[in-house]
Image (tube, rainbow, N blue to C red):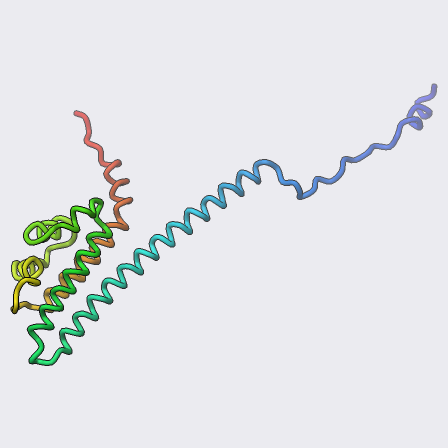
Length: 185
């Protein structure tokens, strides 16, 4: 047999079908699952942060409204308005403490010096003077008070903000504490 005859007996070369876009390879499915999980985690973190910011803004706004009510009270009603302002501020501080404390049942029962000790231990209490501490611990039981309301308003705003910021930074502080391990010598 001639080589030409043999070549004529051969069939043409068949090219394989083109690779289609569907169904994707398993690696693409894994990548899609990872991407969906990352999007879900990002959405959850964003919504949690937004809810925290909303709660902070609501507490600060309520403090502002209470302070404005005290400022706009008529002169003859100032003592009662001051007591109401102190009690409202104390209520807001207690609400924030209940929301951010790990042991909220104990926080709910705190009064007097124990309540002030909690305030000092938990948030930014650098602006907490004895006058403010006395008003917060005993103010609702008194008939009249003398108090620097601007200092009370500044303290309450600072303390509430520090409690919300501590909640935001708790994860990063846990990560930082795991990095700073004592060295063996």
